[in-house]
Image (cartoon, rainbow over all chains, first blue to last red; front, side, top):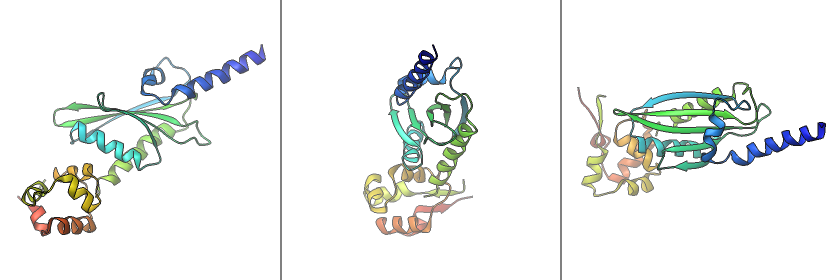
Length: 139
Length: 67
């Protein structure tokens, strides 16, 4: 019984890690009913076009500590992951964009993998990304 | 914003593409596009120097102040 439970937990852990690097599993990880993740969502508006903002964030992520995993130009969605640390197994960062008037709203979502408390890592990811964006617009 | 960026005008005068300028200056096309729209937070003297060198112009040809 104990061994079965152990293998079930390990199997579930491996399953989560196997599917994390795909934008198609976004709904699974960001779902409020997923009890094995901790999610934070933020929004920020920029007075740049959606296309330019999309390219800019890709550039920022490529030059940061985050690892760019997948992008979808048709849906304007980006998936990046953060490094594994002693605090967490690394988080998935889902970034999408919406146009409202002359502005583009960046929708940021940081999700822990197989961890119900992020120890502030989700919030730190958002702060780090904003700092990277701020620094990158000094050319 | 009171500072107007005339990079697109200078590029047209020199018949140069943004991509070409990007390669000469060493600044990404995304950043040059943002500069073109006047949305950058700041511009380094080294970047301005490189742009002026590549476009053979003065800083005043790229940046203008209006009330």
